[in-house]
Structure formats: structure tokens, C-alpha cells
Length: 265
Image (tube, rainbow, N blue to C red; front, side):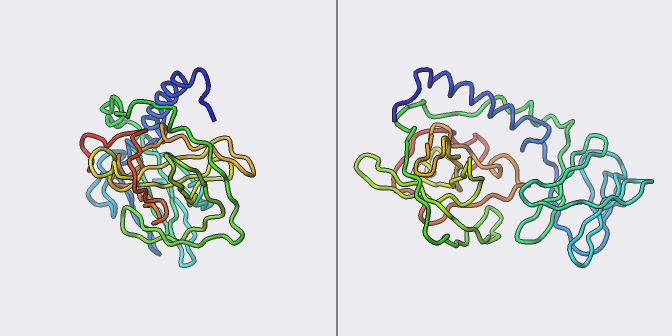
């Protein structure tokens, strides 16, 4: 499939949108902490007498309570408890002054993730290096529905194995070689494929990169490796990112998309 006439301009516009999303209040650059929750109540804020001492925000932001069955509630200072409706795909959020808080869920375990919306970190990221855009890396693949969903256990950047289920695979030929990549995350309209290729040895993030499928139909999917991105864990130690299943570790160099950040490995 040929690339659109204005493809290069589209990629440049996409890069600006990508950078803006990283710098946004809900982006990955301003996270100041991620704390696993257990049954009981913990207080958090910048004061030393909190259970969770933060680097920014009010002295006493409030407390988080997790019940024996996993239910979570937030109690602001001098306020009433507020029940939190948990959703691992769309983590619930609440704000306290300059703090944007989320309760995330992984493998049935909850964690409190906190962003500092007044952080200077977003301004410090001026850009991301990319390989030169090449329409060769915009590939229309077969989108093959698996007769039986494929259960997998994938590792993460924090060495927390996670069970996932793949319902489709993208199949394509590149330079005479057949490849099959499994979508392990994402949505039906934007499947997420976690990959690693030989450029991870010298120029891309060593753990993984993400590619999101586009123009998905019942039988086809577009994989644009010019939009291969660094995972959140390349930007913050407070993210838990999936690593690629064995099937998605490629024995070739995909010289497309985002390169490794200067201060990452």
C-alpha cells in the first residue's frame, strides 16, 4: 500500500502531537511517585509525618484506604471519604492542588500514581530523535483472527509477569521474509503491538517499543513503524511497561520511529 501524498507532513504533525501528549498534565514526564496499595489506610503529602512522603504538593494531601476486598477510597484533608470506582483500562483520577492522582490496577493489585502538574520536567524535554522517515516502513499487513485466543505471560519493565490474551496477529512480508506479530494490548480499533528489534542493541530503547495499528478492518491492519514509540518506562521509573512476547522479538533492524533517549539505556 502506497503512502499518502502528504505522508511526510503527516508524520511531522504526528511527532508534534506525540511530544505534546508527553508534556501534558496527564503525560509521562511529571510523575513523582507510584506506590502499591495494601489493605489499610496510608496518608500522603510532603510533610515527613506522612506514610507516603512526596517531593511536591501540599504538606498533607489526604489519605487512601484500601479495604480487604480491594475497594479503594480517598479522603481529602478535612473532608469526607470518596469511593473510587476502579477501572484498569481507564484509571480513575482525582486532583489535590497541583497533584493529579490515579489508582492503577495491575494483576489485580492497586497502586497510587501521582503526577505533579507544576513540574518543570515537561519543559526540559525539547524533543525526541527519530530515524529518517521512510514510507517503506508503513506496512499494510494481514489482520488474522486467531481461532482460539492465544494466552501469553509477558514480562514487564518491573519484572512483574502479566497474563495477556492475543486475539489477532499481523502477518506481512518484508524483504522476502515473513513476520507475524501479536497484538497483546490496546483496543480493537488501535491494537498495541510491543516489539524489539536489532536496533535495540545500539540506537533504540533496549526493552521495547510500541506500534499501534491503524486503519483496522476485519482482514487488514496498517503498521507504521515510522510511528514506533518509546514506552512510558523510557521516560519515568514510575511506569510499568510490557515487554514483547518472544514472537515479537524481530531478527532484523527496524530503522524507523523513535530512537533511544540520551539519558536512557
